[in-house]
Length: 297
Length: 279
Image (cartoon, rainbow over all chains, first blue to last red; front, side, top):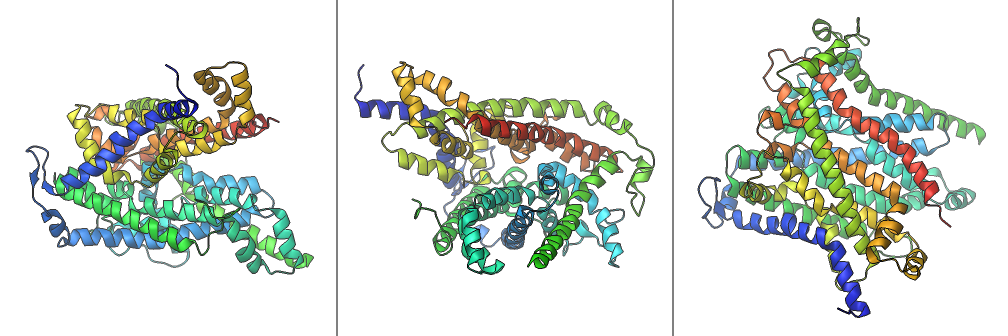
């Protein structure tokens, strides 16, 4: 079989990307479609799915826990994401200066990011222990009374937010790499022009790293929409549903209460929320994201 | 001028020291607790340094019949190793396709792939779950391993970026030598990609190692549990007084492979930079 040049190009292209293409169809496209179909059914795994139209969606919008889970997730996202992002950028800039023991600081700040998932949850569950926890001990130095943390519905989510800062080392490393890519000549030129540090940052440094900033922002938001581990390991969504994250609620609806249709409706709304948020950020980012050599895509 | 610089740098240094201490102290506390006796771990205020170092805690963790830590470890390693092999192999093949060939619809395919990076796993997990239970893969490692062999969008993207930096002349010289399509991939692209492949391998290892949600869905029996589920089960009511010292031992043991990998990789990365300096 002889192929023309373009034919060969097509043939090899699709041959090489075949694994991904198959995976995409089986593990992404099919589940997205199936999820939509299931969201219009009543399905408990044992008996076959029953078509119920929009009933799941109607029920969702009357479900207090559904709203609660959105609120918890929203609150967590809106506080944890910007703060973590800004702090990690600040630390990257501090470390990027000519200071002694740079390598040590970089490693030390990054190290906690390696303790992720369940190990991190275990450690912080212990740190926030109301009677003998390390956190209450530190607070006692400042005259703060011991708090109940995960037993207190007003504090449980805050404890998780505090915990989330601890993982900022990963973002910091990415910012550090980006900062080191900012041409020294540009910074030098700004300095010679007598620009203040503040204006150098806003007019030179930030525009140069803004694509990375945007990427990290979107990824962090999507990730925080999916918080599951701490709720599963530490709080089971409590106390009084104060840490019932969206995905935890989805998980319980599907695999504890066996309401797969209902949970599928939640899954679809999650998908839509991610799409909308990503779209909004991309659209508004045109104002502050700068791409070297003009617009990308 | 000199003075102002000195002060600001000094201040930066000071802030860094305080914050680093805050970042590291939980780790210090984790290690310290893991080496305490049961009674010492319940003291308040907590002691910074254990009165006597209970190295036997680690031994107990592995020998305790209820916890079966060795089995958890083994399961996590098996899953992670197969995931890494699958991810690295398939992602490299796909990334090479995207980088090297200009097939029809390439941009569309690439856009589709990039957009799956943003696809949240919880949004698609129910149909996946039903699919795997249809295949009778429940309580096996297959649902956790097999998808890796179809590549991962993030890793494909990363590797494509890398393959794009390889100069075309390399392939041209391969063509002159009459290298086949497969040989171009295996003896030109792959050998030059050591550091990029290592990065992908490390990321996929760490993701698989730390994953909780998917194993929770697919694994039911205790002898199939991975480290994350096993550890989560350890703090749920099973033990009357949570053996916090043992739990901290477990947390440390779970982190060690990740730390070791990064320690090794740091060297590999610098090596890689030298290697790719082909002129």
